[in-house]
Length: 346
Image 1 (tube, helix red, strand yellow):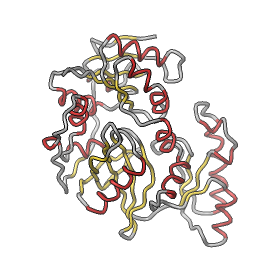
Image 2 (cartoon, helix red, strand yellow; image 1 turned 120 degrees about the vertical axis):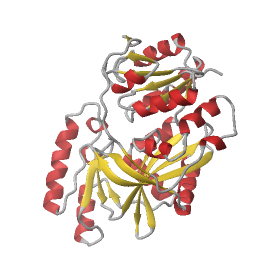
Image 3 (cartoon, helix red, strand yellow; image 1 turned 180 degrees about the vertical axis):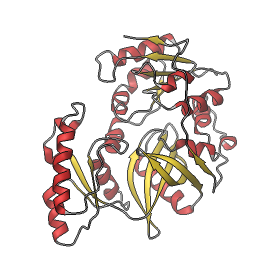
């Protein structure tokens, strides 16, 4: 069966475009859209379109037009800020023939809001770093020896490593807190403009351990399929730059527990620290993350699994050959910013 896959906010995710093109094997097209004309992923797609901003009133109607005109059968969003928008319109896409492979709005909100993520993890009895939304409460706990430096200061809403600071004294904590408030207020798309200052910033204990990334895969009904873990060897700009695949029963059990507690749809990118042999969950990203290529190249072909599920197939063993102790590194390449099939939608 032909499957035409639409990637929204495609950005730099060329690897996903190419993984899905290979998995389709000529039985469909990969279509990529972005508001930036020269977004690299547009150049590798079978079809590519420049679309309005995700905040534009015509954004969803533009996507619907692309869905109809190109017989799109599935939509995959690659941007944290866009996820709630796609989730809210999941029914509209599906009424027009395209399955939006995305979790429900409540799950998206839980993952995108780091305070809600912390509350979910605590309620579900996962180990997670001490986290505060009240500066005075954090300072009181520091003075009472319940919280120690260094700390992590970061926006409640946000992605990658943008605006993350690591204060090592109360004076530095207060100063970086004030600076972060100023920076957040400059970003009108950030929810900090709608909330009180005390609700916009998280203060979190900084863990000293080994950092891991996990791809936790559920089917399109939210049922657990498997967990695929890699040790992060080098990070750059908030993304994994070098990693080593591992197979570990402790992480497998953690992934299954997270899957069953969250009930997300499709792939979940998860950050975990191992501290004295105890795993601590930090963040949950209900999408393909920057670390997915390391899992893919180590033997788990989630692109092919998605297409198999879209076609109603259940025998997936040929797509799961995950091996441990495989190390990969990312590198940059140049790509010509002209696509013959690229069109504008306004």
